Image (tube, rainbow, N blue to C red; front, side, top):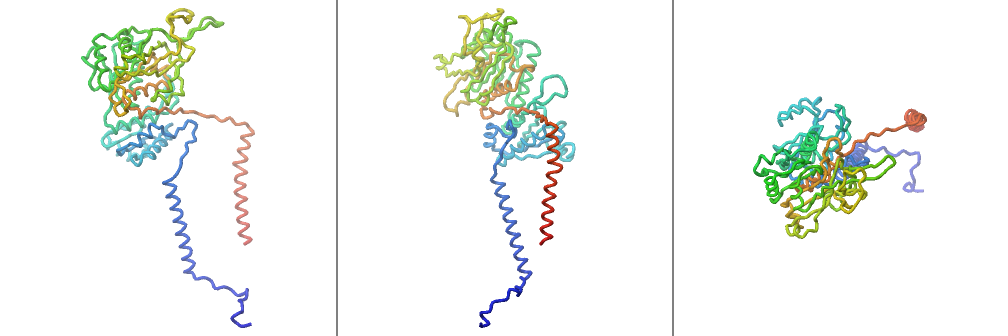
Length: 496
């Protein structure tokens, strides 16, 4: 055969590639791998999905907060000034991160441990003029700032002990309200009407303390006012709080109340005491579509132990009220005594005045409004009020269908129970209802719907056999698998 047709012998060795070629090939592979790595990380940073798998959605912002963050027009700084030993440090850190993520790059979050980061903490003190003597969250927008203490972020169990357990975390409520405060730059004012008595000094103190506490959360001040000492409702009032009066208003005070009610953007929150003598106040409410009947809402029955009357009312929220939708699935218990409310929502005269009345809370069907409530075993008769029994209602004066003009309407919330804010009986749902009502009075519907997150402790009970299984899996099986894989890799390399 010709030499040109001869094939190379298999034993002949191919020439080794040059080192420069190998180096170039490796360099190209490294560059491509880095480019792929950077591209994947870039895509995962910009396009990703997050899931909150906690039972009560602890790390998910409410729709109200998200709506506010979507319209945020100013840059905001959030400083987490917390020691690492705080029981709510993790929740605060995670919640602040949610605000940063959804803040459209308008929100910057920084964490400062005042014990470990002494220099940064001192610099923040100098910049803000705050003492920062306790754990909290500082929110700053321009020259406006608001420091939320740790106690404002939590709800503790009732009692006098200094180590009361934290039962709820209301950080989102506090932080969103503080955001509104620093961005708006103005604190709203509710005037708390005093001088009308109360069921007791403790009840009066509880109601005022609860109003002050809600004010810190919802960006308003609660300032006491005695209408007998002024000539008119203060012109800077964004709302009035009339909580559990025992004594009636004078004619001059009712005239002042009526003048205020007829101004634009007036807001009144009324909690009636069924045992109070407030004829003029009742007449004012009746004139605007809500008439207190003066009965008592109860359920009575005969049992093996004798007659039983129950004045504490289990009720529900009306589902067609827009600003109570977040509470529609919740039940509320009104302690003490309540009276039924007659709603004149079909009154032609009220419609001519553009007054709209809506029920807010309805008692369970087994309750009725009893006139002879002092009897040992009351029974339903003709003079009593049958279900449905309404315990709270809203009144809106100047209500129009155009949402852009509704901000000028005057609004009122009437509740036929005076114990709603009592420290001993107040539940989270009571506070959420009052908070929603106050935000509605302030035309802040966008902030309604932020509820507290309950803090739950879970205990896992393990049997002796389960303890042994965990030991063998974690201490023997898993390390054994890793050791076996390592031995297999070593053996394969030795064979090669």
